[in-house]
Structure formats: C-alpha cells, structure tokens
Image (cartoon, rainbow, N blue to C red):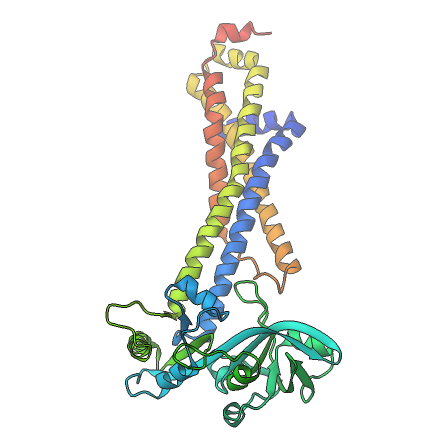
Length: 416
C-alpha cells in the first residue's frame, strides 16, 4: 500500500470507534494544551519583566543593604541598617565618584493612610525631587514635590492611582489632605497608572513623599554610625557605558565610608538592572520549564492511553492482520500501518491541544488583565509541543505495532 492508502485505512479504523478514539486523544489534547498555556504565561511574564526594566534604562543601579542578595532584599524592608542619607549625598557629590550622576536615597515602609474617614494600609516611599526623572514615571494630575520642599521637610505627598481611589473614590485628591500614621500631608500630585510589576505587586498602591519628611515623621531610624538610615539607594550613571565604572567607584567609596577593612565583606550589594534582569529571567525560565514538565506528565498519560487502545485494536483486528499477511503483506507493512494509526491519534490530539492552549491563553489574558502580564503565544512552542506528542505516539505505538507485525498469518486467521 502507498502512504495515502495507509492513512485512509488509519483514519477509517479510528472513525469506526469514534468515542474510544476521542477519549484516547483527550489525554494528548489536555497535555499539549497545558504545556502551551504554561509556556505562554511564562514567556509573557519574561517579556513583561524585560519591558519594565528596559523602560527604566540600562544606566540605573541599586544599592541594597546586607552582605548577600537575600539580605539585601530583606534590607529593603528596613531590617538591615547599613545605608544612610549621608551615603547617598557622598556618592553624588564626591570627587571619587564622577561616573555617578544621581544618587537617590529611598525610605520605604508600610503605614496606615487615612482620608475622609477611610483608613488604608499601603506602602509609603520617601524619595527625592528627582524621582520622576530617575525612574521615568509621569504624573496624571498635579505636580511633584520640589527640591525646596524636600530640603525643608514639607508634609506633601503624591498618590498612586489605587491609593487615591481607595481613599477618595472618583474624586480628585489633589489639594486635599491625608494622614499618614497620624501626620497630616497635603496631596500635591497623582501618579499615572502603571499596573502591576513583574512580581505581581501593584505599582499604583503607593504614597510618595519627600524622603526627609518620611524619615522625620514616619520612619526615624539611625545606623550604628549615627547616620539616617534608608531602605536603599538608586543610582543613575552618567551614561550606559559608565555603569561598570559607577559600580566600582560606588563600592570603593562605600567601603571607605563604612570603614570596612580590606579583608572584610561588604555590608551592601550593588546591582545593575542587567544583573537583576538576568537573575529574574533565569528564575522565571526555570519555573516555566518546571511547570511545563509537570503539565507534560499528562502527555505521558495520553501516550499510555494510545498504547492501550492500540493493543485493543490489534486484538480486535487479528483476523484482518492474518488475511493481509496471507495476501503478501510483509512485517514492515503491518508495523508501519499500526504506527501510522498511533501517530495519527497523537497528531490530531496535539493539534486539538494546540488550539485549546491558544484559546485558554487568550481567555486568561483577557480575564486577568491588570493582574497578570498577557500570555505570549509562540508558534515555536506549539510546534515543539505537537512534535513531542508525535514522538510520544511513536514511542507508545511501537509495542502494539511490533506485536501486530509478529503475528503468524495462520494463527491469526484461525483467531476467534
């Protein structure tokens, strides 16, 4: 038989038991659909991370307190007191750090914010007047606080969209007042909506005020050297090419300011956005592959289902196999026929799974808009998933096909 005849016979054999074939393919449909969906979500998260970090610019560096990256992240919540306002001032003004253009101390804490009888717990971040320019953010209304307000510790604040909505509803908050841990602040601006970060945290659920005011009225904390403690310091290098130099100069100056001996460990961590992007991309990539591998277990289950149905098919068609062999069919013809049937099952199941995964990705992207980055559908992922399903069909179809090809024609003809 030529390949076209073999394919027609394979389709006829599957169509003769529609329900059984459909249930067998269901495992492949679910497996391929799950793999495509999870890979699409993972790639969407990676693309969103890359986009957010790229928007900040590659000339940004962050200094976190602590001797390890993990300690540095804990330090962002204020549990490690090694960075100060004085460190940031020195980094920006010292002649030994010419590659540093801006050093912005950041004071972060969680506090109760109240307005018009509403109480709301949110993140309060103290920054400098350069915040919008450094972090490339925009205002939706009002203005940002000025250098004079920063230096004189004025009680002014800029609200994120979510915070403003929770406190003031649809009313314009600019010009109104909020209380932060009992201290009264005048709202001077409203940030442009930004959505969730790559960690799933809302970037609109925040109150931004002068760092000097936040330190004095909300979070006063001093280091062992008597400096005013900050959560972290954001740096902008004079250019992208100067980032390595800025990192080196920063490390040297901070070690000197913190009186760390030559053989001592740093009590801070300087990271670039490229390093952060690389770490997070690797983590999300490994997590995506891990989740896809778990989803791929259903592909194996589907393959077992294909083997089971093909063994049943061989048993039911024993006399047919004997008749073909009696008419001159060779072992390889029988083997090829049953392998083709197994592959046909897996190909149809894989195509159905690709369509299911695509539809689910679109549905989740629409339903979870604002909570999750949109899934990124890739033809390469779909092709890979279908190829794997075909390989599984071949693998699990070998034994039934080999069993069919090995039947003796006389015994097969006498089979009842």
